[in-house]
Structures are given as C-alpha cells and as structure tokens.
Image (cartoon, rainbow, N blue to C red; front, side, top):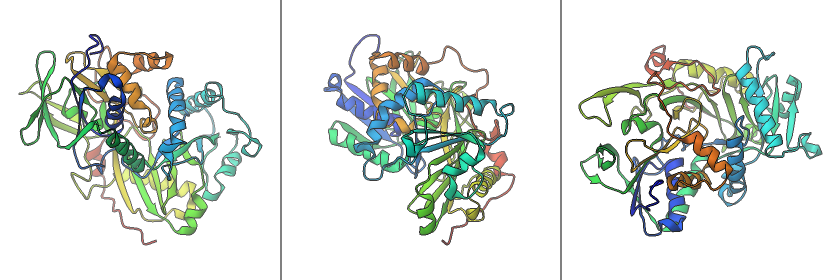
Length: 459
C-alpha cells in the first residue's frame, strides 16, 4: 500500500494494546479510510488482564537520551495534560532519575542516559533548570542530600545524584486504555471481536487468511499484527524482537502512608532499573525495567508448517493463576523497597506479576511492512516504553502505513522503526538498551531456585 498508494477496502488489526488500539483510532479518523472496514481482534475480553498496557500505572516522561522519542513525547504530553489525562488518568508529580553508584566508571550506561536525557529536555524541549520554588522545571540533584530533599517522605536512601523533571508524571495505565477504547468506540467505525488467532496462512507474498481458534478464517486487504510479546506465535521475529518478562510487586498501604507518599515524584534508578511509582488508592508498586526473563517455548513455525522453532513467549497468570515473580526478582524489589522506604521494608506483597515486553536490540520499535508479505504490517517491539505515547502514536503508525513523512520527526522515526536489514545471530534478543538485572535469565531456571509466596497484606 505504501508503494502503490492503494487504500485497502478492509483492515484487520490483531491485538488491542497500545499499538493496535491507537492504530484503529487513527485509521477511523483518516478521511482516506472513510470507506474502509476496520476490524480489531482481541484475544481476551477487553481489557486483557495480562496485557502489558493493563496495570495500575505507567511513567509519562519526555526524559529520553534519544531526542526523537523526547520530541514524540512533546506531541503526546499536551493530551495527557488535557482530556486524555483528565479524571485522574494522569498525575504530574515529577520524575526523579537517579544513579546509585558513587562514581561514573562502573556505571557508564546509566550516567550516559542521565546526561543525554537532561541535555534533551533542556535543549530540545526548552525546560528551565532551577529550583522548583523559583520557577524551575528541571532540578539538578548533585549530592545524596539533594536527592533526599525531593524524596524526603520516603525516608530512605534513594540515590546518589541525578535530576528531577517536575513536568513528568505517571498515568493510570488501565484507565488510559479504557479511555482510548471509548474514543475508538465513539467513531462507530471499528468492529471489535473477541477471538484468539491460531495462525496466519501465508502465501508466496501475502497473508491469505487469518485463522481463529475454532477454525474460522478471516481475510483483509491489510493485516496489522500488534500482539506485543505474543507476536512470535504469528510471525517469525527471531533475531529481531523477543518476549522478556519483567517483575512487578504491589503492597497495600495505610491512608496515612498514602497521604505521605502520594505526592512524591516517581523514582527511577538508572543504575539498576528499579522504580517506585507514587501510590494510588492505597496501593504502591515496586518494579524493575530490566533485561527480564526469557521463556523458551517450542512451537510450530508460524510461516512454514511442518517445521518447529523455539522462541520466548509470555507465561502469565492467565496460564497459571499461581504464577509469581521469581526469587531473584522478589529479592530485588524487596531490597529496593527497604532501601528507599524503610518503614515498608517487611510489608508483604499484595500480589506480584510478570509483565511481558517485546524487546528489540536497541529499544526502537518495529513499525513496518513485512519485507516478504506485502499486505502484512507489524507494530510491535515496544521495549517497555510505548505506553506514554498512547494518545498520538497511532497517527505516527498510520503515517508509516501510508508511506508518508509529514515532518522531520516522522522521517527520523520511520528510519528507526523500519524492518532491520539483517537479524541478529542469536534468536533470542537481549536488548542493548539500558536495563537493570542480569542479562540472559531463563524464567523456569529462576523459578526453580525457590518458591516465593505472595501473602496478602492485612493493612
């Protein structure tokens, strides 16, 4: 379509996460697609409880070492501050980015990210540096005491240095997705169906049909795959993008603790990937933006029937209701909570969860036509940082679908998101983007190291 300029008479979107839902919204509003039927398939009734975008909170920030994503956030941020973030869907309490090590030598990646992110919010976005009470939007934190001054109510050791961007914040992730879903519904243009896709039927140069569990086959002029960490079931992305499981843990807190901690900035440690988002409704989350766990699973080759491949696929509480995070992840969350908020050090987890990313080699998304199947468009590889762009990313995705570059940013993003010229030698992608934890962990191996209970808090 991007090369021929032909508008498809039908579009079938598989997946209703950030990429799928926002693409449906953008298509429904484009005049060029006014005669196009748009169908969106959802694996589970919306909102899918194990989807990466369905959670209590997500960080909303322009703080990127890459100026292109900082610029894209400059597009999205006004929406979060407007109707999209209204009714409690967005809270702008700031983001405190810190390092935990004392010198740069052992922490080069974290230091580089901090320096470049700070440079971008100052030079690219024009944010003012200075103390908040003096009108500053970005406050430098050059000592542990400076860090403590903006995290005082936490009561612990929250970092050695960094900065706080008071224009950043966090979103109620599920509420944001529900709002986008309502926007799509109001267009009256999208047919929602709850059905799991079994496989795609591939011809020589196109997808001939999408087969559902149960046998029904659907066809469309354009098929958009946006199934996140589940993509490998439907298309071969070995060496391009892989599913990795991230650790999240939640505790119940008292109303006094909610009042004390609720106004804090989000705390994100670039050294180890750990973060704590301010509590909402007396629930506090501790998590890690890490290399994650792989879950190697042998499946039928999605494009070549009769062959088998081994890829990482999500395992969630939908598969095993008793699944909790592995001991090493539990320990990491527990130690970070104890370090930053000592008063909550022994509070039992209310629940834990493994959240599944689709990771790419350097954290750039994969938003592209497939090089072989001309009517297949893929939108995946969010790498744990796509949610914040929910209000606007669909428009940018449809630009790529149309083969349009409406501005310099669009041209730059198109280059970043294109199908890679070659795959990595290793099938499993472990990102080179900054992360915490250990690279190369296997879920079953980590789970086997000891059972971790997740008792309910009695607060």
